[in-house]
Image (tube, rainbow, N blue to C red):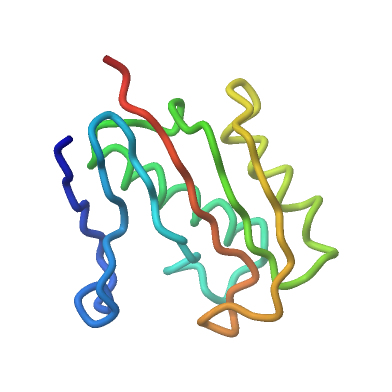
Length: 124
């Protein structure tokens, strides 16, 4: 099985030792993606930014948002679940991937209220 690392724009990738995404065969695993560039915006805009960055990583790996089958959302505030869910639904209302929401104490950047991971496939 062929492995391809898909870089992002984070200066921390070489320091921490991670890739924005990893493609293994026809599977793509997108790392936890924070709302970089929307750090000080509201949780809806942060969620949209996370999913937009994920869509770009998937495209770079040869997949697309339409081929996501699993998402994991990490929220810092329980009360944000419904807003986050609505934005997630905007991206995934037709394909409805398996999804998990977890509330965590905090994320790496204290301004972030959401971080999202995604798994997708590349159609044959």
